[in-house]
Image (cartoon, rainbow, N blue to C red; front, side, top):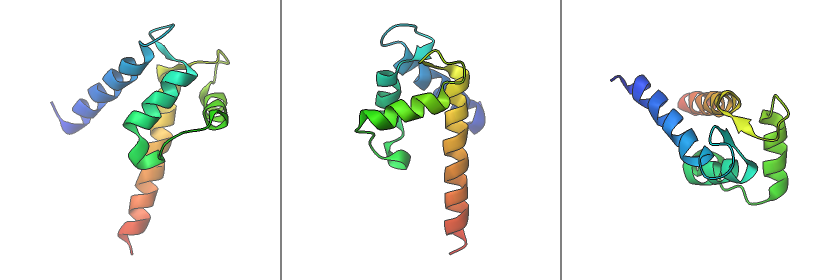
Length: 95
């Protein structure tokens, strides 16, 4: 498999690693989203400690208003973080 294909499989597996902990196994609850960010993205986003941050993030991601984050909503989040990282690294590359 290519690097990109491996990345895609890892992204899917990571989502399901956290979405399967409670409730609907195909959606992230707020607590699952917080755990995923803190365990898998802390190098880029830091630790999410306060509930208000998680609440705001979920409101932003929750396009269908069900108070959970499905895979499509999660991928929107991953894309936004990836774009921000690309812009950061691109900007710092020029220094």
